[in-house]
Image (cartoon, rainbow, N blue to C red):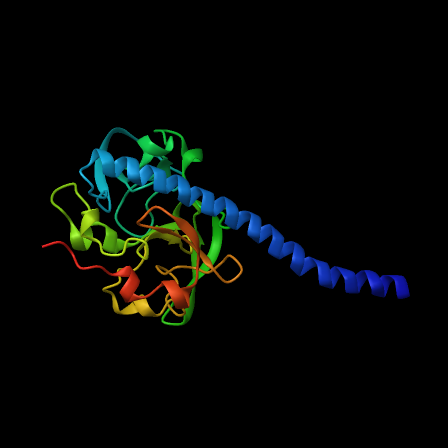
Length: 245
């Protein structure tokens, strides 16, 4: 009995430490994926006069595909780091491939879903989100586990048709979060102009998620990526920048 009690005590002490160590490993892979995204973004900026990609681009597919839900999809939507089959509504048909706007710079390829950069802490499957503090069930996707700051796209600060934001117009890019951990639904942050922006504690659907032992991985506009804290790094002063006039 004494031996069993000792084993039980040791297990109780070791399991949290092992869990934390595994999460640190997943966080390191996640951070590396953000570094890859940084390289892709800067390759894109060089080729596009320092404008970021637009938020999305809706494109036709001459062949299309019938997916698991029985729907025949004839359009796909290009995002920054993946493309997805598309129809209106919450369900988009799932990932199509890794050939998003940044695909040519991150080895993304048409027809290759495995190249989609995400966070290994998130797997496809049931999960939950918070909206106004209320828990709602949601289906989470690995390919939507890294989210884009909408303030960095053409939704608010576009430079014209097919152009996102003009990067030199952003002051203090070292503080400006452009990409980072999200829960895994829709893959985008709430715009800093949205009233829900300041409440990531009760609006988790489009807010950074501090899933890595109390921090979230973030990619900053100057190209560096690191672990960040909601209280210190996610605020209007750092994440909202006036558009170029």
